[in-house]
Length: 168
Image (cartoon, rainbow, N blue to C red; front, side, top):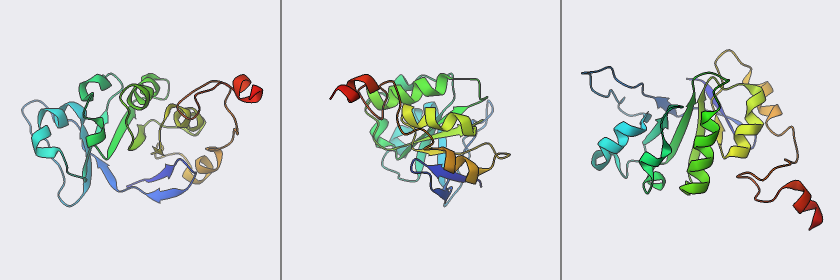
């Protein structure tokens, strides 16, 4: 299992396994004695079985709508957002919606085709942890996470743009 990078640039062992969506006619295969991230819509469909279980989180694919979990997001210890390819930016919008519109307070994780040059933008959108693509150097990425000291625009990490912060 690959390591993950935390928002502060530290690298830790990944404790969560992403459970793939089952094929039609198959059931969800959640590993025993492991923390598991399952598809968000399947968690919602079986919510009565999963709510309150600290070892079950969810993941969104880039085409999923975060509105499906409105009112339930803070029942989840971890929400992961899949980036199927680095050029697919829908995950940034999902993260901002989860943080700003739905008030998600727990760990928000980026998974999939996550590259070093995206980390700063992901952090500004509200991600806490990052699972890099396996062929990338996680130590180099961790050092680059805090490359920029200030962002110009308002985002989840600051509600004022730089020109307003300077005027204060």
